[in-house]
Amino acid sequence: MADHIHPLHERLLGRPAKEALLGQRGLCIWMTGLSGSGKSTIAIGLERALHETGRYAVVLDGDNVRAGINSNLGFSDADRTENIRRIAEVAKLFVQNGAVVICCFVSPTIAIREQAKAIIGAEDFHEVFIDTPLEECERRDVKGLYAKARAGVVKDFTGISAPFEAPTSPAIRIATKGSSEADSTSELLKYILPRIARN
Image (cartoon, rainbow, N blue to C red; front, top):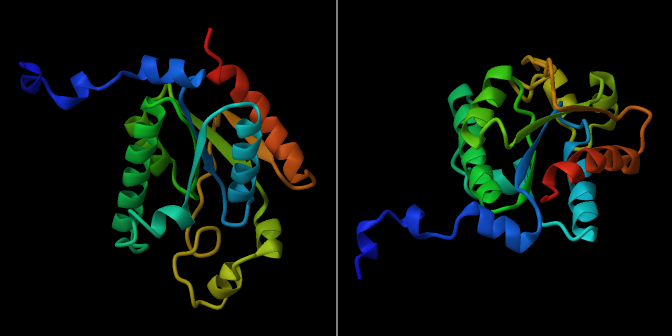
């Protein structure tokens, strides 16, 4: 057999076959926003809502990624950049296999999100700004991180001692203050469904 002379990726089933099997188009929803803005909560609701409509979705967030493939990374600028690079590469693999990938990462700078977009591909990358005011995120402070940042215990914390660059033209902006989790999830679901439909 001569198959061994061709690279592996040329012999694997292609993206169209995977998308046909799943009955959907793959894409990446990249949620950015401050810590405590509601990214992970919305992602969990969105994954369930997609599942209920018969769609296959995968959630990648700081907790499940930092505990596994990125467990050797810290929070220096270089490590943050590498963190996003690895996440984007993983997301790209899922997208190319027909999955809806929901990424929840502060990813605080325009440059770092552009890096992710370049890896995943502009046509598959949908930037979602989970727009929650800093004071609201601090009020929630589920993990106590803002209090530690204010006390100087946590250094370079986005929104307090490190900048957050809000997207200038996100694919969709979800304003969470005054909205329920269900409303935010529904708004995002309405955006996604027509974009993953196969004609």
